[in-house]
Each structure stands twice: as structure tokens, then as C-alpha cells.
Length: 339
Image 1 (tube, rainbow, N blue to C red):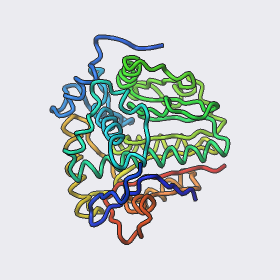
Image 2 (image 1 turned 180 degrees about the horizontal axis):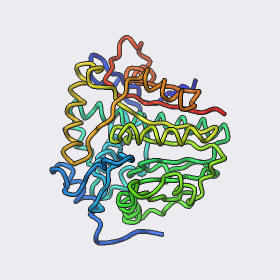
Image 3 (image 1 turned 90 degrees about the horizontal axis):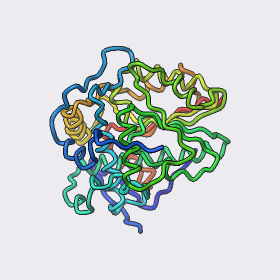
């Protein structure tokens, strides 16, 4: 099993995150909100016109063509992480640049309470695991990467694999905003990346990816971070079923356990963050019991599953025994259909 040895180990002890060691074609339009404006809106109330469709997709439909606020929030956490003592956990050379004026200042770390620290470290950890597992897939010969719900993720700008084709999928509004952020930052869109805008209310994910050039007869690696909690279970399993239908393919995603499965700190954290995302119209709606999820993935055809709860993540990064770590309820899971 692939082991990860980051530069700055961390642990969660008695529900608290603690540093153990600190080691050193472009879219432009005045109609799109600026990054600073979007950052300010993150703290406001629900945006009119943002709804979750009651139909099968379960994907948020942004009727007013406004980019996802949670995508911006996650991007700011990744950028802030670059200033932190734990930056070695996940290095991202473009996390700050892509945000422009909306990028956080290092001083914001001084305002970070335990809940925000735990969330930032989880966001960094899931990205680190996903990219390390991707590296293993590339070594096996995988040459296609699909980033579902890419937001302001910067892997395509950092892609170290010349032969890896990257397909970024997102709602048209969020994707156009991202491409404007890239242009405004003076960065070039990566030649190996194909942007695939998908309106999940009206378009088929598989059809749009095929049109963009994804080869369904060749294995692909799917990164699906920070998305699953916002979807209906029907939408989640429809997507997983399609991925499982591609021999040799692999998916990495994160999910949360029901609140009653979490320790006290995890319950408090979930209540806090769930309220924040719900207030901007993008609520968490799906949670999973690990054993039940594993059973469902196996039934879909995945035969290699690795599910890491928060305590496992902390143990890997810190080397501390699992008994010394707690369960905050967040998971990172990798599922592969080997043949």
C-alpha cells in the first residue's frame, strides 16, 4: 500500500489539531464577479436563484451564472495553507497567484480557530493523498485525469506529467470564472488541459467528456474532492457507476459520516461548517456509513478500496499510533477497478 511521508507531520489529539514538527483561449467579461467581490460575498446570506434541483442530478444549478462560493472558500484555504507551519503537507505554487486580490494574507493564520485549522488541514491532506495516488496510477500507465468539480484547483497548472491529459469538469459559471482568474493572474492555460463545462441539469457528463476527447476504453483517474457532500446519493452513485464501467479506472473522493458517528469535536466542527455552506445556498446533503459505502462500491465493481478516516490520516502524517488520534468524521477514499 502506498505510504505518504510529508514534510510536516500533524496529529489530532483529543480532538485538537496540533503541529508536531514545522519543516522547512481566455475568458474575460465584466459580467463575471471579481475575486475580491466573490471573497466578500462568502460571508453573506444565500444568493437568490441558487437551488438544488429536485431532479436526478442533485447538482447545484446556478441560475444566475454566479460561480460557486464554496469553491472560492476552499481555494482560500489552500492559499492560506502555503503560509502555515504545515505547508510541507501540500505545496501549491499557484494557490495564491490564481486568487489575485482575493488571496488571503499570512496574518489570517492568527485568526484561525481550531475548527478552521482542522478544515484547512483536511483540505490540504485530501489534495496530497489524491495527487500521491495519481502519481502511483501514472506509474502504472494511466494517462487520463478527470477533475470533477475542479473549482480553482491548480493541478493542471502544476502537472508534472508530460503525457497526462487533464480534463477539468465544472459548472459553466464556475469554470468560466476560473479561466478568467487564470488570465487575470497572467498565467497561461495549460496546453494539456481540456476545460469541459457541464450543466448537469441539461447535459450528460459522459457525453461531454467523450466529446472533449476522453477515451472510455482506456483507464482514467478521477479526482472528486469537496463535491460529494453537496450531491444526492442518486447523483453520487450514478457517477460512481459510470466510472466503475471504465476498466482500470480509479476515483478519489472525500465524504463525511453522519454526525452521530463523530467525536464531540467532530460534531461541533460539522455543525459549524454545515451552517456556513448552507448559508450561501450550497448545503451538505449526503453522508455515509463507511461499511455501507464500501459494500456499495464493491457491488458497483470496484475491487480495490482504501478508506482513510481522519484518525488514519493523522496517524500517517505524524507516525502517532491510531489510538492517540480521534475520529472527526471526515474520510478520504480511493476506489479502483483493477480490470
